[in-house]
Structures are given as structure tokens and as C-alpha cells.
Image (cartoon, one colour):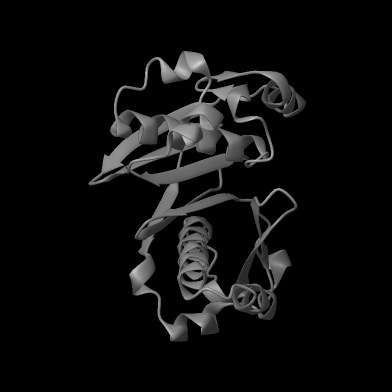
Length: 212
């Protein structure tokens, strides 16, 4: 399976990158009043557009980043469409997912996979209340370091994105690789596809990718 993953440093986005956004994307960007949040959002869109350009290019379709619009659905899942290009000339569907944490934004696109969920998490100390909310007691028993916490959380978020739930779900319902409650129902509604997980490290970050 071809998975196209792109990393973009948040500090690397420049004002000229706004020219690669569609009018709707620009309006959403301007809706963020904090400069840091704008940079994170823009870096995420740049990563998604680059991943999609490469994914579509693998099939011989020449598409520019400014031809691609990436907007969130009601759950926050990124949905992409072609705007300035002839959509009928690119009769393919591609799954896309994106994430950002700390200094990095990341996105993955795939032609072969119908669903994706990617997440990047910076290894850092967290408040004890976060651990209680994020992890079921059975999970917390196996988390003995902040590295393990970042790894488990990256997997959990990747799976929640794969299911199309985002954080609109009881976090205890996803205990990698198991689903419970609403998460199990969402998985069954998708036809209970086999879910594959890739995990890797990048310096002080942990990354996870869930795909079918």
C-alpha cells in the first residue's frame, strides 16, 4: 500500500504560503486570532496538500496545492476536494488525515486506503488529571513513562481519527487496539475493517498511523 506522509515545520510557514489556500481556507485561517494557532493550522494544510499532490501524482494526475481545498467536517476530520482544477479529470478518491504537535505538522494521504488516522505527539509532562481523562485504568497501569504516554496517546488519537470520531467520544472507549462503546459501534458501522497500525519515533515525538 502506498502511504504518502509529509512533515512541515510550524516555524517554516511563511505569509506567501497563504497564496496556496482557497478563499474558504483563507477565511478559516483568519478566524484564528492567535498567531501560533494560525501557523499550526497553515502548516497542517500545507502538509495535507503536499501529501495529496504526491498521492494523486502517483497515478499520473498533475494537481497543484492551490487546486486542493482541505476543510474539516463536523467532527474535525479533514475532507478534501478539487476547486480550480477539472475534478472530472481526477476520478479517484484519496483518504487524508493530519495532525500537529509542538514544532511539527504531519499529514498522510493514500489512494488505496479508504480511511486513515495519523497523529504526532510531543513527549512532555502532563497534568495527572489528563491521564485520568485520557486513559482507562487498565491502560494507566502499563504507562510507566512520559514516552509511553505519548506513544499510547498517539495511537489512541490515530484510531479516533480513523473512526471519524475525533475527540467527540469517551476516550476510554479506545484502548489500542481494542474498541468499546461508541467506538466499537462506529467501527462496526464502517463494516468492522481490519485496522493496521504503524508507530515510530522522531526525536522527542511519537507518531502513529492507523489505516485499513
